[in-house]
Image 1 (cartoon, helix red, strand yellow):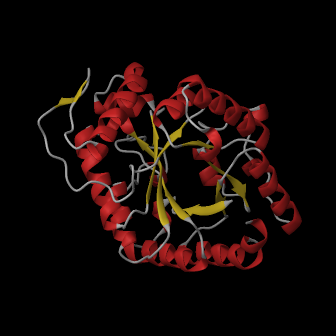
Image 2 (cartoon, one colour):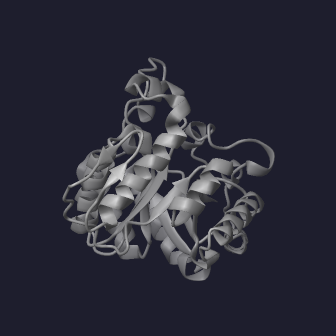
Length: 309
């Protein structure tokens, strides 16, 4: 099992120096990845908190953090693929992979916020088809000696694309979302699945479906990466409220509904997720500023990290 943490909400940091300090501490403590979420142009929402509107450009933020860290990876969680022109996004991510010496893991999704798609002028109903095509085009740019692609939404030929990613054969793509289309996308285009939230039982059911599809396509399911954000060690009401669009009722309810406090209970939960096929967990804390988040990271690394791996 690998472990990471999120820097969200970004509004809780006093500035870039605090973001860098937390990432550097996580690197030194042995965490495997820092999770970076995205929106691009959300509605104004006069009554909504600034947290719902304050989003960094992820490649720029990760490049900044890469300069002050050595081994921790940067997991986008997730880039909404239809929001971005694919050639420009492929260039930004390849550059980030080079600057971080191959420390990028790219969580990607088709998006869910209809109002944001409308403000960007992107057809919401076509987001799945756009995502599939953009991902194929990006992989072509990252891997081909002579990139060429002809699709409905993007086409190119007779082009050069350098630098290529450091990671070979390409930057890993972890597909966000749950359901038939995301599962198919994992099997056809992805290196892993990033369901975000879910009980071990719900995740295990999804993993089983994805593995069957991988086998049907002649791909080995043994190396499937599966990441969740369901290990909550404290109630963060603000973050919970923002995740209600992801977390449904019943079997899909995240463990964040009841935070884990007892050491044995936490270790048992990690074992449950591992048995379900999860290979990465993002740990959530109750925190309001950088100092509190750093304290939570230190406590987890000291008291739980050795027992949970």
